[in-house]
Amino acid sequence: MSGINDYIDNEVKGNDVVLFMKGTPGFPQCGFSGQVVQILDYIGADYKGVNVLDSAELRQGIKEYSNWPTIPQLYVKGEFVGGCDIIREMFQAGELQTFLVEKGVSVKGAA
Image 1 (tube, rainbow, N blue to C red):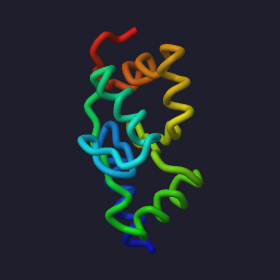
Image 2: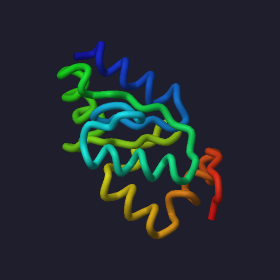
Image 3: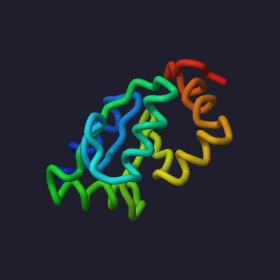
Image 4: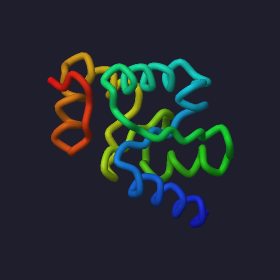
């Protein structure tokens, strides 16, 4: 399992914003992943989508990596932010844009 952990670690630390999701940003394959993609696209955040459906090992590995049971999972600058509900609540409260800007991630229409 260390190979998959190394892969996840490299993705999380090698990208400012990375979304582990079901499907791809262009073709989300679950409603929750789709919601997070819509939010990130709406605020204009540049992010990398990683499709956990490509591998059962990756799908299980990301849950163990974050100690978080659900997908999607959003990481910003190496830090686990949360899943769909948390991202949606942060976005609706205007906190997501502020959080990203504070982390040095550019967004359009930042609060």
